[in-house]
Image 1 (spheres, rainbow, N blue to C red):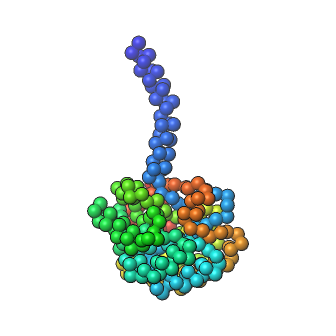
Image 2 (cartoon, helix red, strand yellow):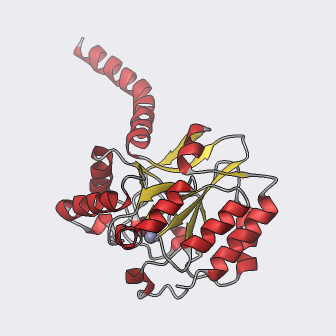
Length: 261
Ligand SMILES: [Zn+2]
């Protein structure tokens, strides 16, 4: 009798373990996954600009976006937003979305909980009243503890599925060619309207954003009849969010920066 019971339990377990494992992975991706793009057949794309606002570059970029009727999302560093509130206002009034990128551009994965919350709230205050509940992790760093804090704080964490390493590149034609090649419907593109000083000193040589802005203009000129450039909230409204469990504590090689399950 006991033997039969054991055998039938094993049979049930064998049948259930695969769907259960699948359900757990799915649940983890749904609740803890970050948005990397959107599944959609519509020709829509979200350009995102990190680390600003900066008086040398953000205004020029806003003029370029306006010229082509493009909307974008700016993940601002709180310290910069606090220093240039007029720029924050100008970005918002032009119809772009604004998200949180911490106050001092620090890796949340390397901070204690108290400092992590301080960074989030200080940035949220600096971009108020324009900030959306969107968060872009500095350096792409995110671990489970940081992800849970962001979940509790009500943030949608947004990473990317197109990266052209614009913080190193200096050739606007090459950058535009890569963007043209890699942009697909539903893409979220990582770009920088500034290079925040702390990590500019760390080996990102192209503090000057002129080449990047030229690349954005070339891209918009070439793709304006193929794609609509929208904010991340608008992109999310027009398709199904692609979510990945994103765990990165160091960014040694940006090309191989991948999500861990
Ligand atoms: Zn950044």
